[in-house]
Length: 285
Image (tube, rainbow, N blue to C red; front, side, top):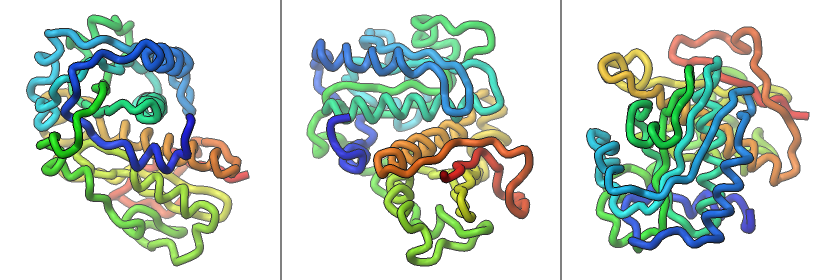
């Protein structure tokens, strides 16, 4: 990308109002190239992505998605499917967020849209194969001025949990003492700015010597196990959000010159906590 990652992350917001201007040819080619390169997530899932021009029928696919139904004027959509796998939704979120940040760097507005897309018109245009799922799409285009975006003020996108609520030391619920994060303090702040469905921020990072352990903290009535999930079979969006946070973490670490790798540990690395689901570990090197 052409600018510091922190600038791009802070520029990105959930844009729900766009100018009726098609993507410029250069921007379209760049995004198509990025999407073509995003084929395998960090945890091994194979994914496919495409850049679609908006059609008059897309509004039907967005009905029933709450505030997302207010997306107006998007001229393109980033769509994709993830193959089956233990961490397929996390990989999908990671890879799609990389494309979102590239789009932001190009001056485009974007908005993550989570829902039941596997049988939508979006899915018909990318043709999911056996075992492939479409947990979310991303609206894109040239944004109207933020002052003209009436939904943004009510969407909670400007609110973030504190670092002490998201990042813990050695065990669940113990905030990182000042200075302990060291060179990772900046990386954690960029993770704190990661987007998430309904701004739930379901990730929790626990730092131990030489490792950061990513956990999912579910909220009642949202995601897997909720009534909404059972009735609609909507994608388990908190897991997609975990992948988005992973993307911010790794890109920021790489930019800062901090090396490491992702690892799936065979067992819970810390004292089990019923409110948390272990996801993945970043091993520092």
